Length: 437
Image (cartoon, rainbow, N blue to C red):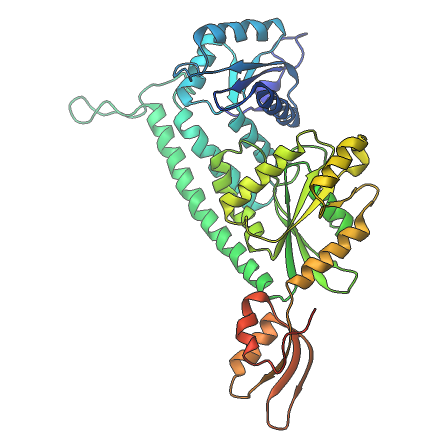
């Protein structure tokens, strides 16, 4: 069912590589312009897989047809247009049901895929770490389980017995379904173990007094490029959607000598399949546990504002919409329209405008990161009695101690930077009001 190499191979000599015809969907809740916008993004996703696009068309769907998603007449029309352009693959910019996908393939005698399957295959191609591989495989198995019917031309009985002793046996499809379900269960158990390991790693980082910042944003906005430019991380950065899936954390020393942990996260995309949101929740949780967020937007994209809305929507779904956020507009070197640039500057007065290529705006960005990092700090002058060794131990594990000594009475005296979640506890042992960072 996946868009495998066989699909992309030459079907006959001289025909060239298999190409796709893209079908956008304009439903009752969307406009023609938004349908074309989504269709253009689907084209980028398909190009990321290396599939040539022969043509595209936006279709108005007032009511979903249970058999073909669009009407039967429209399906025949789309088939004729695709064949006239030499396409051998139909890709719909929506989520097709298993029976709809089978019916369209049978009617058109062509390979049929939907947006969800395209994104799944991109994720499968980009996954590198064990966790990402498991997450993608789990999402793919859940997607293909209801689509096994029709994937086999042989539905012969798999097992049987002597006449009158056992039933006629089970079909191959039933055997395959059971195997896929077992694989899903095994993947879920393995992912639980991996997620526990990731949670342990996060606890180690949370005990570290260094401030955490998660770089978030729409896919291909330049998050990995920004991490590389700031920290020389060496993360893969390509002009492709979902070039990287795995979170990478690097330490950044700010101009005021404070340290900051920057984490690059997986990019967001509109119409992201819910199965992938669920599968990558442990990865996306980097944004939830961060002290503040660095939102990167591609200022050269004509759809920047809708990308911004999508990112905020995903953050809300993750429960991270109330996080402090620094908004950064990337790729200023590619935005040649001064009117558009001036309009964005007037809308986002607190935004930082940068270019990861020319390093334009980096001094302002570093100053803003320093300011946000200081906002997470609280410096206290502490006097902890010798009977509270637990508080002293907690200060060593969670705080950043600048000065410390033992008084003649046995009290532990220190000047320390304490994390926000421990501020109330340590304030009970403060000799003076909190200092400004």
